[in-house]
Length: 109
Image (cartoon, rainbow, N blue to C red; front, side, top):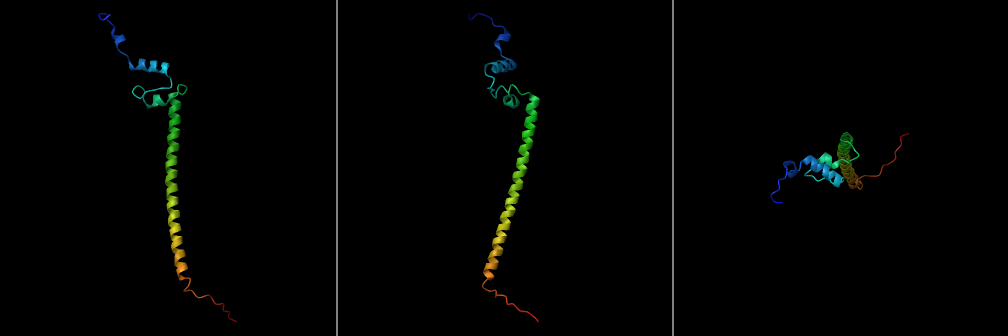
């Protein structure tokens, strides 16, 4: 058996053949060394065009979420600033409360 010759094409495994074999053995498992990101994320029932459209929609929604988070942060900062200003003004009014004389009602006839 050691002296038997094996044809070249039987001594090597091509990547495309290995991919097909891996898909037939375990369709849900796609190792990173063999499949690229798109191939790993694709379900056998989804075409590459459909996947790319879904991914583009997902990325757009993710960008909208990032922008909305930024706007929320700005609004929260503004609210905090206004609350601090309100507290400072309230403190100024409360501090002057004892110095203010009650208003007198005066009428001119």
